[in-house]
Structures are given as structure tokens and as C-alpha cells.
Length: 98
Image (tube, rainbow, N blue to C red; front, top):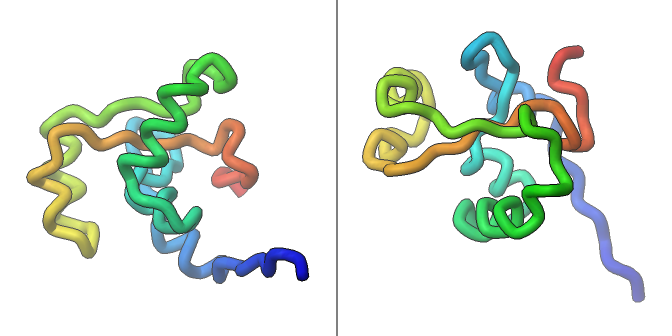
């Protein structure tokens, strides 16, 4: 028996896209949820393989950005996060700019 692939509805992905610093991005927690892993696991995997990605693939949000986002996302716990990463459409397997 092979593994079954589950698909994520396009609407779910579109709802998670935010515009930050002029880029359409997915937050680390949203991207991890789409892949079915914990946020820390996603960030660890990216850190271990950072040389495989372009420099503009992701960036860390500053405190002010985190606080602004905490007012619009459904997860208010984000404002307590010390680090939040935003992933651009580079090497993510989809084009967020469409």
C-alpha cells in the first residue's frame, strides 16, 4: 500500500497569505500546519538546510510586525512568540504572487 496524499484546499492557503514588507508570505506556523508538522520542526529543518534556499526565502519578523499581525490572525498567541518567520514564495512549491 502506498501513502495517501492529502490535499489542502486552496482557500485555506489563500487565507493564510499575508502581505509583509511588500511580500506575500506564509508564517512559519501556517506553513507547518499545511505540512502537518510542528512549527519548531519546520524551523529546525529549514535551519539545518539553510544553504539550499535563496537568502530572500524567509525572514524573521520584528516585534512590531508580530504585534500588528497578532491583531489580524486567528491565533492571538502569536504576540507571545519570541521568533516568527515569514516564508516567501521562493522554493515553497507554489507561487504566492499569482
